[in-house]
Length: 183
Image (cartoon, rainbow, N blue to C red):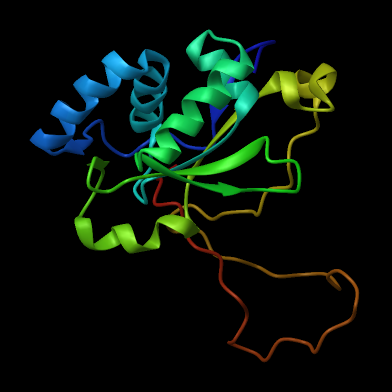
């Protein structure tokens, strides 16, 4: 991520978000009453995951909106008070929250998955909020689990990592999944 760039943990599987006609009429009224709340609602819905939730800091939302953080707070208050979203605080400061979109307004995926909204979310991150932002492009890569290509066999060897565990039974060695790629 370059300085000031926003990132999400994963991109949505599809590009479709479903809405009801009545929601569009209500959204039009919201645009008249609070244009910033309507804008924020569109930005949240555009980023919602399969479980109708987005996790982001208020600073990230301010960046997305191109507005001051106080404008974001006011817009969030309007959306919450008018039942467009539900807000679940993450941590004790209240500046990072899970925003759960009212499933009568917009949703992705099948309607029967909506009841799990509180357990899964898209997460929006900004490098500006990371304490190690100066080192983001110079980090060591994460440890990778080795994988096998189709037709390869695993040959376990060595003592392994501590603590010492029971040796493998012949013919029952753990197997790594194949990647399905041919050499």
